[in-house]
Image (cartoon, rainbow, N blue to C red):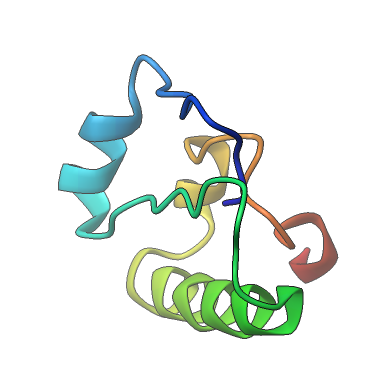
Length: 71
């Protein structure tokens, strides 16, 4: 995710991280190239889909980049 000076933490994000064995990472206001974030996120999306099916998509944070393009 690309954020700003103050990262945003969602109420249930830690439960999601434990349940699906992934972690959210906020790059702050100086992220790498968007292409890098896109490829990384797509790899994580594919992993989650193969391991857990589509149920994780209902629980993931709404601001995860490039998720809408994967549906």
